[in-house]
Length: 602
Image (cartoon, rainbow, N blue to C red; front, side):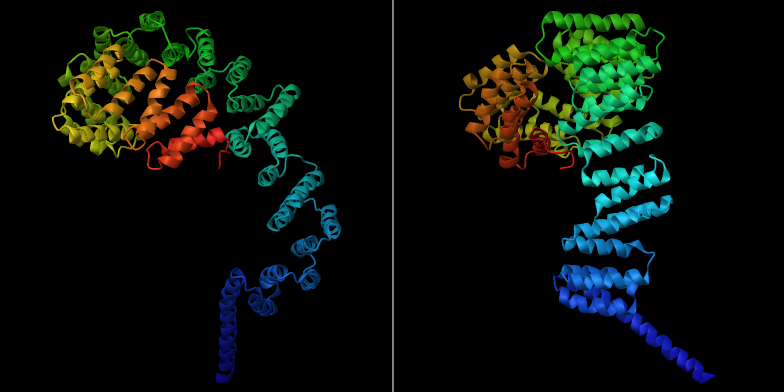
């Protein structure tokens, strides 16, 4: 018996060595192939193929095709077809060989013969489409699934597969039609459809195709509300905000829901500066009556939207007084309660910064922080606002106490860092420059880009000017002017700025004064007069503290205020090329790409 076991052991060792050698040879052949040494790889693949036809065929055929040995590839594939007659992989490979040699008709004949013989089996049809896809034959993968639908007598099958293939092919019309076929039975996939379509549509042409298809569907199937929801999204993408609202109102009237979709849409409209449409939407919710769930929130947001609309443009004193009356009427109707705390906060800011009714603003904010149940973040914002009022009215100690409370209650958050910045800025306003700079240097690493940028600029402003004048006398006057700008007292701010050169000629604040005056003009919505000041800052001193800010502000003015996209693009490009280290670089890149018309995925 010993000799029997010895023979078995020898056979096992030989088989193991052979298998190990094969395993070792494959990576070597792959490496040769990757390095462009296909002939060396071919010898190894050929030897491996002899040991296991099925396992090593893909490597062998790939190498033959790379070397353009089409006759050998055809002969090899036909051999495999005879050996494995039920495996369509080899037939598809043969068709691929024909295509590469220019025999498209022969390839099509093979493929179409496969499609004629499609079994009424969903898994088999999917598998065949997958084999075409693996061979980069997208067209026949699609044809397989489309023929499969006919074979199965169902136009609902293979939706996911077809959507993926249409997306891969970039076929906008087909993917739109497929989604419109799929979504009525699968409304939960609406967000996925919107994401896929937005990634495919690089310009308005795609959205126009979608709109046309949707309007036809809505006409034929008016009961399918999913089409209206998608149409609303389409209008939003094209910034046709009035139509988006019109469709939402029509949908709400039909479904008679609680109005949550319209309320959310109005927030989106406000964020996109479509104030009139948002106001119309909020008014619709208010008109539903006092018992409607969004009556109070809509009233509050209606006034807040009017606030944003008025203060975003040029306004009169009468506009502000009317807005104040709207807030007071709201509070008279509902009282100072948790649900109206946000309105109280907005009213107080209006009174303090626009109407300069500091006593009334102070009373409102002191009251709102005593209302039970106010959300912590809103409570913190009210404390910051009250601190600002105290600062403007000369109660700096009370202001710093409130800022410090918020900083302590919200550590390592945006609102906490905002409070810390305001404490540092308060020290700067009051001439405690060295303490302010130490705090600002910490805030340069803030998670909020806006706070980090403001902290960096203010720190550099203090540092540069204390280096030029250790007494900081000119800087103290500039800081007082800065506080007047913050308090929206433009005339007093300009007078204070103009006094600096008179009292301290030859000071180092020339560019800082220009930037301060530009900020005042922007605050007054006088963009035309602000532009030459900003241009002078970067043209005369392209490496000064405010140069990159001036360039970005110019881009923003042309982009969002004057609607001159060509000029905006020039200034965003200037940030990218001339100021790559600027904190505005990411915003500049995004805005530049939007104006250039890049696709969302680029």
